[in-house]
Length: 147
Image (cartoon, rainbow, N blue to C red; front, side, top):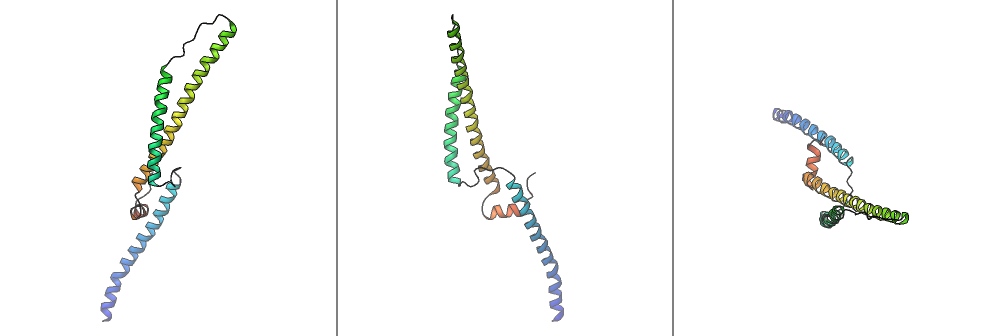
């Protein structure tokens, strides 16, 4: 009977050692993955999936509208009118400058909205790649972080 126990325990030691190594690797890799994820700026990390979908729809509509307005405004040339007097020439210069500034500001605003839209899309892509629940846990524990 003693030989049966010793034979069973000799098979158990390598199995326990392997399990210990696997757990150690999982803990170490999980920590590395969390550190790698923390290094990536994610301004929308705390939002729920539903909130992200709502934001995505709203930003997409806003970006489309701003792009249409920008395309229309930038496609129109500000015609310079001839001015005979110096005061009229200064007024015309200021008018053209205001129009030009308005078009640049519209383009800048469209770019900012596009960047926000891209950040939301990036957050959704990260969540899709990572998964949720046990899938996310196992991926963090056993898949090396992306370089």
